[in-house]
Image 1 (cartoon, rainbow, N blue to C red):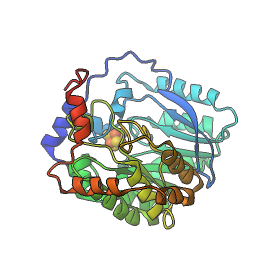
Image 2 (tube, rainbow, N blue to C red; image 1 turned 180 degrees about the horizontal axis):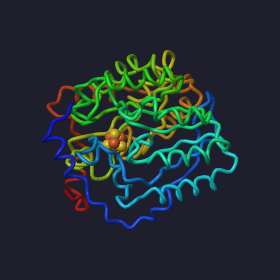
Image 3 (cartoon, rainbow, N blue to C red; image 1 turned 90 degrees about the vertical axis):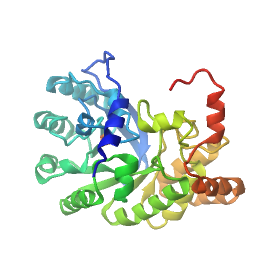
Image 4 (cartoon, protein in one colour; image 1 turned 60 degrees about the vertical axis):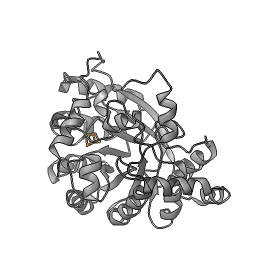
Length: 351
Ligand code: SF4
């Protein structure tokens, strides 16, 4: 499940978090659109600052920089203050997504007493809730308090890929497809919805392989999932992926590829994508900026209708893009030569 040296290398890149954060305030709270109730609507998003993912004690996933937002000194009382801050910010928004830098259902990260406090405060205020969790915390006893309170819940699991080899060697996820299916089966049995996250273009595979991996993964997770979020790589600080990218050994996926996936899968599966860092150097982007393509990806995801995206996509000249994807697939490593040359001539990059 884990390669020891690989895991230790990733752990070595995780910096000590010496920043003084306000432990009584969430990392951030904002509103965005999502379609957790089957139509696009205003959704509150809150990132709680916690002690972080249990996986950080050993290593991290190769793309995960969420440890940058954790604080080791957080105690239950701090989390309760954060919940109060969120409560005061909720106004009339009825749909809520909670992120931590780990798993909301991990009792060591969010103690059951804190979870119960959260449920008590939110149960009459929120009509739909999404929280994230690794598979190991999805158990009858962690779900029961939400059910008892009558909260309409969707749980998001970062499977990333249904291919165990990619999960182990590319992502260092410390999990397997079987664990995901076991957790998804529990959720299906308990009639709790599942959002599955897939990571588009983990390191060490070509863009062409990454496209194939997403297609295969969607086919496998589709029957278990209320929706499937295709998350194109977004390069986060102090991660293995950032290290590779700075050396010109990794290029984030192209918007064209993301559009290809949504168009191809959208008529058969509830896929969506709200790319973080889209059209930027660290996120999903083509060689030239394309605002319209990104907007159509997001709008198609919200509407669950990719017709306009498909029309626009079919009007584009994709010859150069297809050539690049083929070429990259034949290379020994999946570098980004343009960016590498630019970076080498820049004095602002440190290694
Ligand atoms: S399981 Fe999630 S929070 Fe934990 S290291 Fe992986 S991506 Fe980060």
